[in-house]
Length: 394
Image 1 (tube, helix red, strand yellow):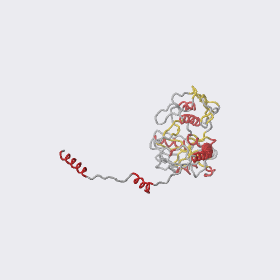
Image 2 (spheres, helix red, strand yellow):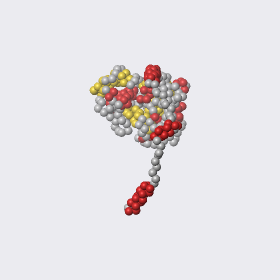
Image 3 (tube, helix red, strand yellow):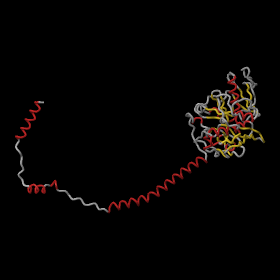
Image 4 (tube, one colour):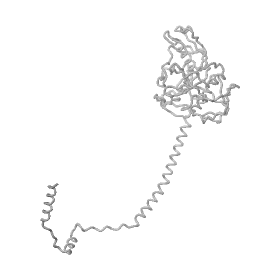
């Protein structure tokens, strides 16, 4: 600290010993020098005329007035185009390519860019419906087939363009023999099961299946059940079927205790079957005694296992009576279909339609708050069905 003070004192003495500098010039001389200094000479800026901002503002208003109507017109045009596009998509057929990823792989209707779909199909029907109506299928050929998933049979109706197939070979057997081998079952999420081993033919409304010795369809009760149910879901336009050996002799399955039925008739109620991807199909499933349409429709309220689910929401009760080939289903309490999730309401309606169709009947629903729902007029018997779970075959 002492050294620092000494340094300060020394510095102060040195500063005092420095000679003082004095400017002996007069103020007049200094002013003259400053006037002659070029660095201090500046060009005077012109004053901004106050009327220029006004002109700019008026011009901006004129441009804005011209642009606004054009922008409004363009916006309205865009809305009109968008509305027309939506209307077109809703009213006309669409073409799509099958995508086998996850949920899209099992889409209820697969469209193709290389094939023209029947004009009656609307986008809404394709995306949501589990049935193909008879009035929708007049320009197409149908290939029903029972696809298999974990020993459960799911009836699917593949839709073919009529100009791709010879009309003389349009029955289910001819179509099966031509197309079964090219269907990508695994791509749709199903097990690889078709085509059947051996040869399939038809005679007098009877499907004849000639089996090789190593067919393995009779390994157990389960394999026989899958085989029979898939036959029934595949050859829906035929009445009976029989199995023969390579010498065309009647063939009895080896598994003891299983009787081979020769009828292709399906008399079962429909339930909801959900694939691992979340895709839903409606399937006929045994549930107690269903020898009559009334028993089958009432059985739809309760599933006996967790393989399938009811399409009838819990708490919805109804009565059934049959009159003039119409199954009349009347809800005990008025049902607001719009209050149900859209998919569930549609699954219930189409489940009723498919079940009644198994007995050769149409169905009419009474005591609903809506007179129309989706594509259905609920004031009269619902339309006849051409197939279940439709898929457009590329």
